Image 1 (cartoon, rainbow, N blue to C red):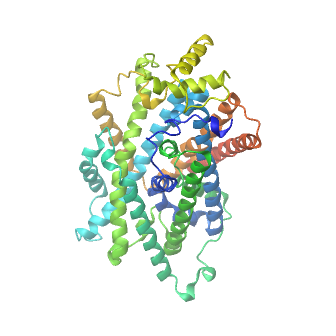
Image 2: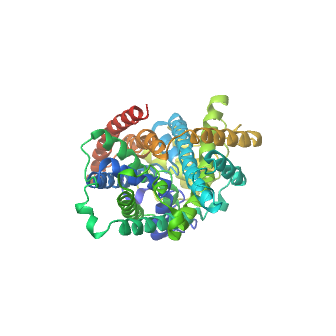
Image 3: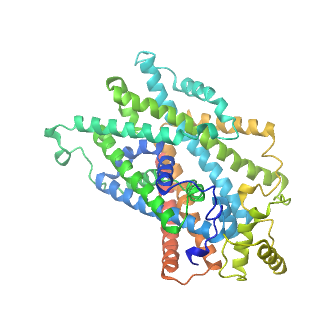
Length: 489
């Protein structure tokens, strides 16, 4: 299929598309960069500088390819969300499965950010409150108070109030990175240069340690949830422009993560913690204190941002379990049905040179009639963002508050018993991280590509890449998950 035949939601020239390539790349970069970078120095201490850098390159490349692969799936089918891509490939059950996996994944992520919030704010409260280092405040109490303070954000149904949080996150983590670089530079004196320091691990000969490091490194590039919304907002969203935005974002994240990992490891050495901030002393460095303070605010504000999609995903699955699959489609406007009609018209090859920006009402009606004659259902596969189905649970106010309480309480109870955030990132990265970021996009593309065959060299290359990514990531999922469980036990 040629790029001119791509199905875009909203359409190519829609006034809703206002983001430039630079803005799109920055937004994707800001949403990818988060608390996961605080554990990269720990991953380097396990794998070594050379092996860790190679793992970072591999993670960046396959993540970049996987993000663009999901964009191709969206453009071939007109799907506007990750769940819709799964539905276009395998039907409604796959959409529900993706919702369940995303919900569980985000619960783990919320737990990880709670662990970070507990560590960061306990250290800051100790400094600000001038507590004795031998009797610091209870981290369980500090985390509980922190969660109580953000309850107004947790119960929101819209995150409009936090729309600038990604910029705060980027700025605060950047300050931390600069502070760590400064600390590493001052720590390594001329007599203990990197290349002459015997305490520096260049490469690890322990394969088990490499299996522990790679999930943490790959998790620092996870942005699969955000790439389709960013593509949907891009002005003139040609394939080359969305690819440029994705490449710019991943390259920025790679440079930033590499600097953060190296500086954090060289500063803390073999004693580096799963959260590198535990190795820092913000009381002795105002610059480091500022970075940790900003990072603490960011970590706390990320929790409600992750809670909303987590809650929506889990409630959608619960709604299906209680009431069964949704069978009552909401009547849609003609403009909302257009992407679906175009997609299905292409699948039955009634209009090979269809132009979505110049379609008339007569053509829509003819295509819809042709689809019905061929047994295609046009209402049951509309985009998720049009509220296709009437739900019973999701819009219930009591369920909304109760589910919020259950999710937060569950994550809180796990967070206070987890010894370190690296354990959370390891489990998250090696299991659901590989599944969501690599396996599902490749499987969906292989299925969708058969319905929209294109015998160009580019299409064949993507098919081969999808098979290689599917096989290698499946192997990595089993190997890394097994090793992580063994280490935890």
